[in-house]
Each structure stands twice: as C-alpha cells, then as structure tokens.
Length: 249
Image (cartoon, rainbow, N blue to C red):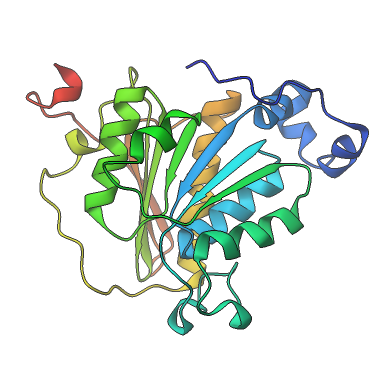
C-alpha cells in the first residue's frame, strides 16, 4: 500500500539519538517510513493508552486520537495515560497532552468525538492506518467498512480479562473483519480488564502494524493472534473469508 508523504523531512540529529536503540531493528529507511506515517487510534482507553505510548515511542510521525468519552475513576486501573487529576476531562485531550510531552518530535491531533457514520470517512481518509482500541463491535465494524473502502491498514484488537486477540487487515491482501468473524457480535455492557493483558495486546497490535509498514519480520495479515494469559499461550488462527462478503465480491 502507498503511504501518504506528510512527513518527508529526514531524521534530525536529535531523532537519530532518540531512536538509537531501535535503528538496528528498522534501519534509517524503516525509521523514516515510521516518521512519514500517520495513524488514527480510535479509543483512548486501556488499549488506546498503551498503543499511543508505543506508537509515540517508535516515532510514528502523526497520531490522531479519537474518543468521545471522559475520564472516570474506574478507568485508572488500566488506562495509563489518564491520572487522578484527569477525571472528568475528555479522554482524547488527556491522552494527547501526555503523548505530546512523551515525544515532542511527532504531531498529535486530538478529536474529542465518537467515531460515527458522519465523521468516519473524513477521519480515516486522512491517515495511513487505523488501530481499533474500542470496547464495542458496532464501531469496530464501522471502522472496518470505512477502512476497507478507503484502502487503509486496519489493526483490530480486543481483550477480555486475561485473554485478547489481534487481527491485521490490509485491503487487497486480506479479507475484511466482518468477513472473517461472525456477522453478528454483541458487546457486553461491562467486561473484565486488567492492565497487563491490555499492554500485551496493544503491543502485539503495534508490532503487527510496524511489520506491515516497514517490511520487517513476518506479518500475520488476515490471521487472528490469540493470547491466553492464564496459560501464557499464543496461537495464530487462519481465518477464512465468507464467500458472500462484500469485500470479496
């Protein structure tokens, strides 16, 4: 897939020092690709907090944070970008403030709104990739539909207690999320969540994204990566598309 070239400047001397420990992994070319990439993280809660930290630490050039909720006391056990003094603040703004301080050499945009039918194409259309950091299937399937239509990389991630899963979707190379999963999934009103599981799943999601962006390693595009913290097992499940899905017509 072709990435938009918003950040075409070469790495500055201070960035070369900042990313010194990861340059042996990516090389100058790979690190420059990360700087040239824009990513939207939909949801600035548990998964989103860790995904945002990892993306900013890696030097992804532009991060767009989308979340219409406000910080609550019950968020603080796992949503590491939000602190006691942030209770009542919009999550997108709270997260953006921390990420800007964490890495001042990237661009951060906060959108304190829910992703909806009316704004999804505009938001997703101006980034190169989308990370799902949500807790409901309705919005996940909206992201999936719009990202596939606009040919944007989409990384789905979800957790439940000690378990979690990640599915990397690349239009033209894989089937869509709706095609790979049951057509009707319901979102529980409340689900168990702890920070260690959230951090692990967010890390897997970001690693899958950077493998696609930089070409390092072996991508698991179109597969489901399943983590079970109770046994410390990780499985990769081959997902088969549905013949009647719109993405394969």
